[in-house]
Amino acid sequence: MIDRVDLQDCSEKELIRKAVEGEASAFGVLYDRHHGAIYRFVYLRVGHREEAEDLTHHVFLSAWENMRAFQDEGFPITSWFYRIARNRVVDFYRTRRSHVDIDRVPEDILGLSVDDSSQGLIRSMELATVYKALLQLPQDQQDVVVMRFINDLSYREIAHAMQKNEGAVRVIQHRAMKALRLIVSKNTTNEKA
Amino acid sequence: MKKRDLKKALSALHTIKPSKDYARTSRLNILLVPQKTDTFSSDFVVNGNSKHSFGVVLYANRTMRVASFVVGGAAIVMLAYVATQQLSPLFLPGLSQTKIVAEADSVDRIIDIELQRVTYFKTTSKESSNAINLITTKTLDHLNDGIINSEVQSLNVSSTDPQLNQNINEFLDVINN
Image 1 (tube, helix red, strand yellow):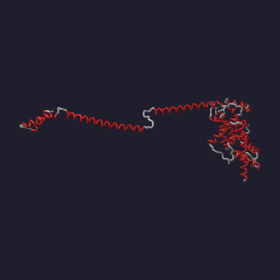
Image 2: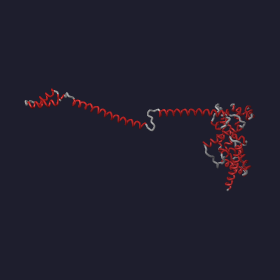
Image 3: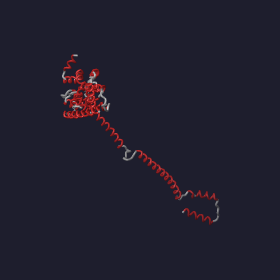
Image 4: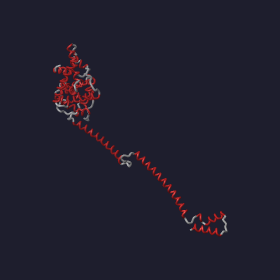
């Protein structure tokens, strides 16, 4: 227990060093810090709880198994986790599912607004509309939107995770937001009609 | 929807999180797995971090070994094929083995016919030679004295006519000369 507390206080650099040396508990702390964000990223890409859990598990399993080869480049380790996650999602669509059902909104998203008031319902509908619009974007744009506006990554981290330069990430983000607004307004008009 | 509202809606999705049970089980299962001593894995290379050069080197090394085995095997198969085809005594471009066998059979039949003709000519020439020999020899067996006497006796020729005897002697002289 004392070790666990000590590790929680460790810097990320120190945790990585220990994990590279094979210390499982150090990797466990890294898992605790980052698995939520990676799960969210995967979940928003595949739109299914069990599949997101399965893919996220494999992301961290792969990272742990290959931890000895990790070399610190001055980027947060999350960039590496995101990179593995992106590849897992691509593999998922290539081998198991060719598309995602854009009309189906997962209950987890509908349940985010737990308020039963009319405001809560409107908020819930709004989230569903945005989520459905997000799924209609190209993969790169989805990745950037989720990493930037939902998981709060910096441009530098996103660029490293996507193996692109920061300028390219900004361009993708601009196009994504433009397309997203267009799709949302179009869908809203259709629903009203 | 305004850009600000859109960003606000997106940030609301930040509250999505995995269940605690799943997180605990997954963490435990991952940490029970031993780390790989060999740094190569398909996942790792696909992620393509150039800094992870050791894994890439191992991958390249394996690939080269596999490729060399494949190329070596292919070279051996090709050499065997070329040796069989080019060094074969039956190898003639444009001719198949079936055609060659058919041609050999045809030659065999011609040789048989020629041998039969040779045997026939050998037999007939021997018989002709004997006949010619008999005809051309001066000491003909059918003209010897013993045979003539026996033929005379069988004919019972008895003549006292001197003219007839004279004629016979002249005739015999002509034949003998």
